[in-house]
Length: 334
Image (cartoon, rainbow, N blue to C red; front, side):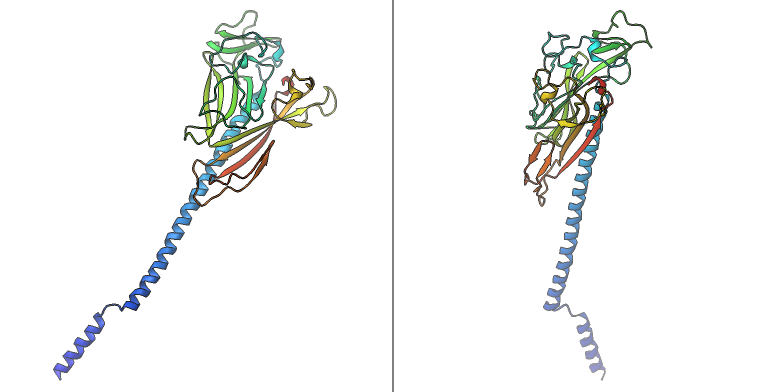
C-alpha cells in the first residue's frame, strides 16, 4: 500500500514538473512575437513622430528669427538720424558717380553709400558685385538691399563709414572726425552707416548642401563682411508695395501695386520710371527646408508664391513656406 502511494506521488510530481509541449511553445512564441512587433512599431512610430515634430519646430523657429531680423531692418530703412532727406546728405553717391569712399570688398561702385536707394534688390538672382559665400548664391532667389543709419548715435570712429546730421543737412565721413560746420550734440548726431544685402547661399555652417540666409554687411575698415543669419533657408522672395498716386492726393501713402525688385517703375534709367512712386511696404516669402531627408516622407506639394510657380520636388526634405508684409516707417525718404 505504501508502495502504491509512493508511486502515485512520483507520478503526480512528474506530471507537475513536465515542460511545455511543442504546440504550447509555438503559441507562446507567436504571441510574444506579435507583442514585440507591436512594441517596436509603437516605438518606431513615436520616434518618427518626435523627429518630425522637432524638425517642424526647428523650421518654425528659424522662420520667426529670420523674419524678425528682416522686419527690424526694413522698419529702419531710410532712417538717417536727424535728417530724413538723403539728397541733403553730402557724400551720397550712386554707381554712375566716381568712388566716394573706398570700401574693401564693396559690392559695386558706391554700393555702400547710395543713400538715395534705401531699399533695393535683385529679382530672381544675386546680382551684386561681390562674391557670394557658401558655394555661391542659390539660383532664382531674390536679393534684398537695405541702407540706413544705426538706430542709436555712436561715437566718431576712424575707419568706419558714419553719417553726421542736423536738422538741415548731413555728411558721410570715415576719419573719426566730425565734419566742420555741425553744431555739437544734441543739435547734431553721429550714426554708423548700415548697408546690408540679404541673399540665399547654397551652403551654410550646417553643411555644403544645406542652403542658408546670409547677408553682406558694411563694417569697420570700411569693408564688406559676409555673415550667416539662419541655415536651412532654401528660397527668399521679395515684392515691393508701391504707391503711384500723386503727392497730396487722397490715398497717398497706401499700396496700389506690388512689383518685383528692380522694376522699371522704380528705375531712374528706365523710360517707365515714375518719379512720384514710393515704396511703402515690402512683402517677404521664405522657404525653410529641413537639414536631413526623411526616409518615409516625400515632398509632393507644388508651391505658388511671389512670382514663383514651383513644381513638387518629390524629394524627402520637409519644407515650410512663410510670408509677411511689412509697412515701412520712413517711406517719405524712399
